[in-house]
Amino acid sequence: MPSPILPSTHPEVLAYDPGITPDSGGLPGLDVLQSIVSSINLYAIIAVVGALAASLAMWAWGHFSGGHQAEANGKKGTIASVGAALGLGAANGLVAFFSALGSQIK
Image 1 (cartoon, one colour):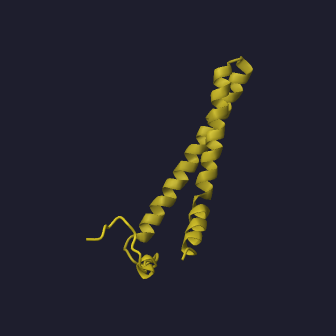
Image 2 (spheres, rainbow, N blue to C red):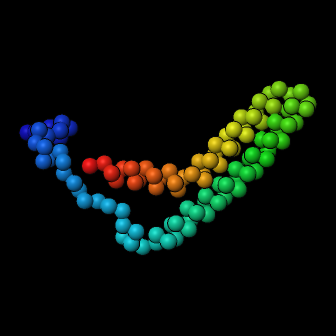
Image 3 (cartoon, one colour):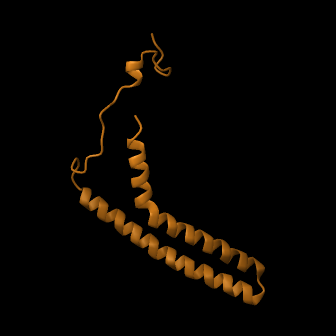
């Protein structure tokens, strides 16, 4: 009995195309799901703006009060907030880019 873990030695078996492609009309409720994900993205961006404001305030407070730990935490929070904003803003483009890149693999 052949092992299911090891690849077959027949090239036609290795090059099998299952024929699965994304279909926007395949399931009901796609519009609702897109609306939910867009709303989550909006709330996340609003939360990032709040986190950025708090981090910048902590950075300034730590700098002017001589609190080196608060200043360092403010800097870390600022970098994390900027990174989160970049990721949230680029999420759609990144998924589209890598989806298009993955569809070119033969």
